[in-house]
Amino acid sequence: MEACIDCHGADGVGRENTIPNLRGQPKAYLEAQVLAFKSGQRHSTFMDPVVHNVADEELIKAADFYASIAVSTPETLQWRGDKWPADMPLGERIAYSGKWNDKVPACVSCHGPNGVGVAPSFPMLMGQNKDYLVNQLKAWKSDQRPPGVLGSMVTIAKGLTDEEIEAVASYFTSQGGAQ
Image 1 (cartoon, rainbow, N blue to C red):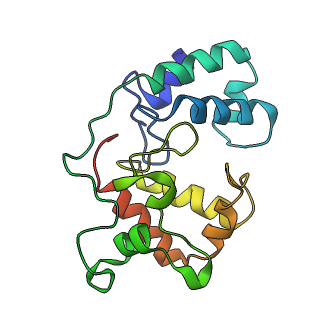
Image 2 (image 1 turned 30 degrees about the horizontal axis):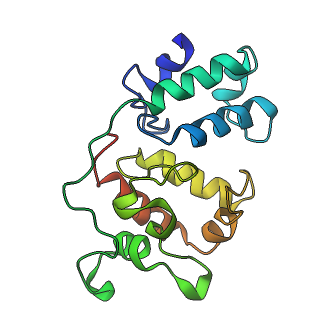
């Protein structure tokens, strides 16, 4: 846990904007991610040297610890947004309406209202560190990250421009929760 706390904090909030917030993420999702780093399916210059020196059981305990930390959610969750899509800022529009012509579904269709996450497999986007989200979307876009539980994140990321990636990451960061 000491190695995890150095970057992710005892409260599960990433100490740098490029480090993910882990608190309240679905347990199965966190377990799958740490084991993907350990097996080499997923790579990170920060995580790779840490996970290879830790037993799988310890990685799972750390994932379970972070998953158990409660996160407050907005009082009113929005499945479809409260505005006409044309009146929404770009990031919110992508989050709630997607870009169907580019094979990008609404983010909330998998990640839940306001991006609260949907256990067991879809992580919370709400309140996540912006640079972390941007980096992950760009990693999928450049085939540098496994495609995700439904195999869809590569296609989704490739359907977004860099401006849209920045906008949708900003939107979810602004939703609070895990910050």
